Image 1 (spheres, rainbow, N blue to C red):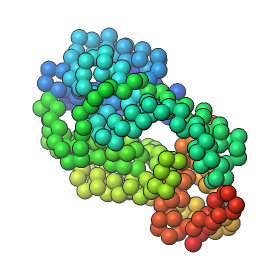
Image 2 (tube, rainbow, N blue to C red):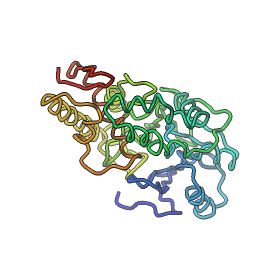
Image 3 (tube, one colour):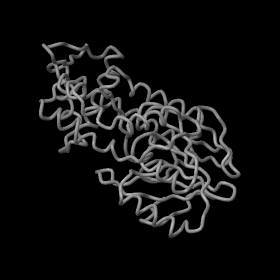
Image 4 (cartoon, rainbow, N blue to C red):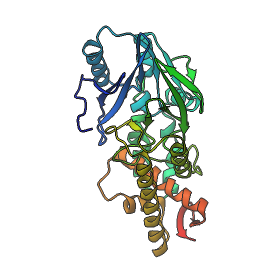
Length: 334
């Protein structure tokens, strides 16, 4: 598929499935949202960030191609603000229920109730302990996390979606799949009758989704979780399914894409291992090893957290060892 929807436009990507795009103020400059025919209305999948521009874009859709339509529910795939940011606003405006995983809803509530948590001293010390200069640690923990504030007030309640449950939307039965790594308990939907897979950000056509470790769980292994999730997805969803992702275009070739994503992370781990074999490196040192482009504070926070995800995965595998140098940590090849 070569066409993409323009602002205020929807495209039908499968019978009863509409695709729209909302702009994002980042290097990844858009997020996809979908509408699934649901009896006498439409189920919405994902929301965009909460800012005036995105709400204006929603209003253009509601006044334009979706004018006069009824909406039945809001399904949110995961808690990142580009997917859940407008959930409270849309649920209130349209009088619909939020449906998502427990992990997504509780993470959303945490962002809403403690918006300044990532600017606190423990987060700043977390970056500094891994080699980031004090001014950089402060910048990343404030401006770098500003994206996480782009959310509306969450709905007071939700309906939980669980791994393995069947979700009937209109004339289709969707199997709910959940996966970790990119986010906690990310929701994906597979319709066997149509060979249709809404993959959220777990599998994307041209980019590798961010896999990050944060100060709240510094020893987590999200990369291990992510790679395991790819295997589980491909054990359920066929290679020739139509994949509708949270970014970029619909595509077919799910298993091939899984192999490409897994190989990408193998190569990144090899780069880390080679760098740490020359001399011990901090996680902050590894950011420039893995990312050659100039990064702003927002991008640096993601790059650092992804570098640490590869490090934790390799420590878990026994390929790297932590070395303490005073109050700093470095890594050496095992």
